[in-house]
Image (cartoon, rainbow, N blue to C red; front, side, top):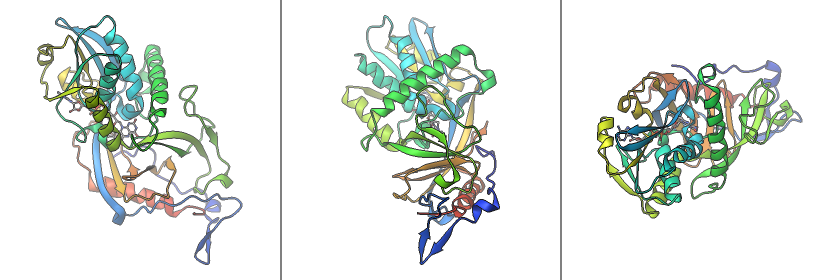
Length: 363
Ligand SMILES: Cc1cc2nc3c(=O)[nH]c(=O)nc-3n(C[C@H](O)[C@H](O)[C@H](O)COP(=O)(O)OP(=O)(O)OC[C@H]3O[C@@H](n4cnc5c(N)ncnc54)[C@H](O)[C@@H]3O)c2cc1C
């Protein structure tokens, strides 16, 4: 098993001495700003999940090609950043597909990529049918922690300049599109995010992440010397995908449950334009052997509404959501078994427990 980041280490002893409790109430030192602790313990685990990220070292595929007399546009392979990139990648895909098109459109797949593509095609004024083997909640997209951040989307040494430009455009559009969906309806929320980091600033694109700076030890309770803070959005994936499906149906979209075994099956569809949004399914369907599963496992704890920040570091990551506190995670290439492994889950919970038990002060 591979943790997303290196195993958690506790930080310096000097930092660990800063916390005390007086009269049952937490005491705040001048050099420590408290935050509520996550109660990370096996007894608070309410469910565990595992999913297979569709990972390509050379980056996701947005490409148009001919399939018999049809136009086929691929939109798959977004690794650990598919929620993040969904609107933007789908925007690139529809720009390729809708040029000169008239008539109905087929979208294959109803994960986050299929639903975003279908909605953008509807917004452009075309009737859409989604053909899909499974609907939410039975998609990989439902498993995702839902942080807006393009984590593990490609390997730096294996992408072209052309791909980087495509990636930046996709991220920029997604960033703006998710902002107009913030709120309880779609389950999209802003949260301050604390990241263990040595780099003074992280800028993926000019506008993201926005608030982004190294903190002084006095500004946080974490037992870590170098912490960076940025603000980003978090998507409660179950609620979000349910609402996206609802929007699709309200706009007149049709759904047919169907699994395709080969491109020839797709060529027989009545629609002259087809978007392929099958995620990891594209490996077999289109024989893309560069597409690999990257298994991710999560432990979900009972919700704690008072926890309104996310944290990431060598210990793993914690995203608080109304449907539970998400603790992650693993990134296990070429593991095809999408069932949570008890030993990995126990390690995830234990590393978070060590981290939160070591807070220098707590709210
Ligand atoms: C543990 C974990 C945590 C994650 N955390 C984040 C995160 O914090 N932020 C983030 O941005 N991303 C995250 N991701 C990544 C994200 O979940 C994926 O990149 C994203 O879900 C991919 O979406 P998709 O629509 O391409 O694929 P899927 O959600 O897998 O959807 C594919 C669809 O295609 C259908 N399909 C497949 N094959 C066929 C076929 N042959 N015929 C018909 N239909 C077919 C399926 O039924 C499904 O409906 C995480 C993933 C995991 C596993």
